[in-house]
Image 1 (tube, rainbow, N blue to C red):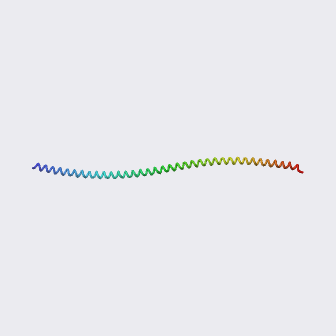
Image 2 (image 1 turned 135 degrees about the vertical axis):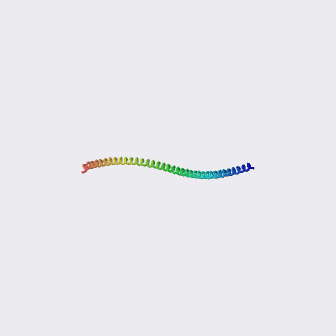
Image 3 (image 1 turned 90 degrees about the horizontal axis):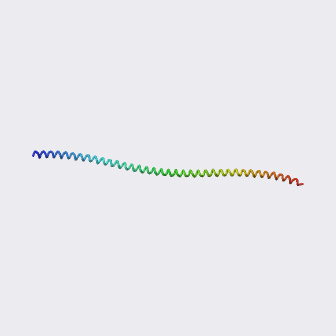
Length: 132
């Protein structure tokens, strides 16, 4: 009977130890679950921040594409203005050349008219000799 009592005491002690171990395991498991839940929350927050960053980057990309498009339009407009300015300069040179040409022709016409006026004066002088 003494052995049964000792065995019962050892069994009771082992049961208390096992109960303590189970309690410790439960406690540690609870902490681990809490840590995992906290990690899940942090990961979810990280995913949300990453999604926001992706949306921001896409918005920036879209804005940059618009800027590139506007810059291309400005470049095209600048080229058109350059071409128009070149045509205006060429037209101005042609007009200037024609004005100089016309001036030269007018000077020749003036010289010719003066010459003709001189000849007409001489002819009048000659005709006056024939009048009595």
